[in-house]
Structure formats: C-alpha cells, structure tokens
Length: 293
Ligand code: ATP
Image 1 (spheres, rainbow, N blue to C red):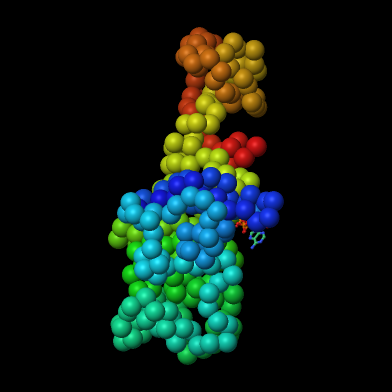
Image 2: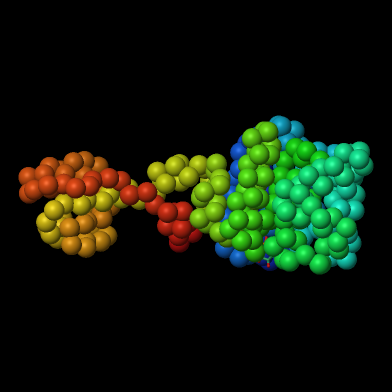
C-alpha cells in the first residue's frame, strides 16, 4: 500500500499541495481528480521523488519510500517520458531493462503489448510516426512493463478514443488485479466513475473528499424521486423536505428531516398509485461540484 501523510509543497507564495494525506491500497485503482492547478501533478511528482516535499511523507508498505522502491514503480509523467525520435521497441526495452528486466524478456513483453494494441508491426518506427492516441498507448505500455509494484499515471486517458480507453483501462485493471496499487489523474469524471475503486478529490492543493464512490455519495445530499400517476405538484410544501424539481407526475426532493420520506410515501399512496419511489444516485460530477463548491 502506498500512503501519503501530510504532504505539502509551495512554489513561492503558492501552496500548491497543502497537507495532503490519502492511501492507495494494494490492488485498488484510485482516481485523482481536481480542477486545473489543483495540485495533482505536483503530488504525483512528490510520490515519484522528482520533487521534494516541504513537509510530509510518502510510505510504501508502512516504511518511508526509497529510491529503489520508486524505481520499481511505473510512472507516466504529464510531459510523457518517451522520445519522439527514437524507435518504439528500443525505448520500451531500454526502460524495462532499467527496471531490471532481461533484454530478451523485455523485447518479448514489448512485442506482446504492442501486438495487443494492434501496433505489433510498428516496433521499429519512431514514436513520432504514430498518431497521438497510439503514442499515448505506447506511453502507457512503457509504464506497465516490467511488472511494476505500483502505478502512478498522470492523465493516462487524455486524448484516447473510447476503444483505446477501454483497452488501456483493461490493462490497468489487470495490473490492479495482481495486487498493484494504481493512482491515476483524470478530468474525465464518467471514466473515473466507471473504473475506480476509490477517489481522491483535490481543490486548491487540499483533499476535499476521499473514499469509495458510495462513501462519497453517502456524505452528499440524500435525494429521492417519486413518480405517481397524477400531478405531483402537491409534494411542494411537504414538511421536512426540499423539492428540487417537479415535472408532471415526477418529484425529486432532498430530505431535510429523516422520516419525512415515509410520511411523503404514505401521503402519495393515499392519493393514488405510486409508480416509482427510490433514492437518486448522484453522478460523480454532482458529487464533485458539491465538494468543490
Ligand atoms: P492540471 O489538471 O492542469 O494538470 P494539476 O492539478 O496537475 O493541474 P499542478 O500541475 O500540480 O496542478 O499545479 C499546482 C499549482 O502549482 C499550479 O498553480 C501550478 O501553476 C503550480 N506549479 C506547479 N509546478 C510549478 C513549478 N515548478 N513552479 C511554480 N509553480 C508551479
């Protein structure tokens, strides 16, 4: 497990990362989200030892992380790590060798990964000859090669088409299933929602929410939807709840006083047929807007 405790970093007067603590458990995919400039890249650079924190610690399996441990991580930096003018295969093999892999095994893995992405015949091409999306696939391949013990990926899905997103997500899930902790940043909230076991939401350098989606949702507003077979405008004015929307036979409301939802249901049944009565699951964008407001 990777653990960040009270990590901080300033640039001049700007506190880019401010007392950030969270964990990335083994085998879990954690989505790291936050507005531009929230501090995600700075945090990831500190995890990887590329930037020194002003305070706080990064730990691996309960001990301070070392250079040796970091060298066994797969990292995809924001500025991307591979050289545009170098052949793809050679770069992948070289990077895997740096992580201690034998050349023949590295060449085999590079070939397997590229074949899996439909790029098996491009290993000798310079990276710049590939489309941007395919270059991104190669960058992700570079991070996952040589059995990394942890994965830190800065916006790995940006610029990928939906099929490529699914392929790359599959690849990362496989690594997580082997017990690898995976932390990735993204602005694509739907994607994060679909892929992640947990989320960390950063705003102005601080963690404003962290946990599983259900945990975050339970901290949010408690909303219900009622659908009846007649006009629902009577719901407005019911004590103990705040109506957010009434459209014809449908009312959406938040519960202010616990128990008010039961009284509302009793009243609805007294008036006629109830076609639907259920809690409304918030979208991740709604949760995000609430916690960063
Ligand atoms: P984005 O989603 O746009 O990539 P981010 O969440 O990754 O943003 P960071 O890149 O970590 O945000 O930046 C956090 C803040 O720190 C920003 O205000 C940025 O301008 C500032 N910053 C980052 N690196 C430096 C640096 N080397 N020198 C000065 N300021 C920096």
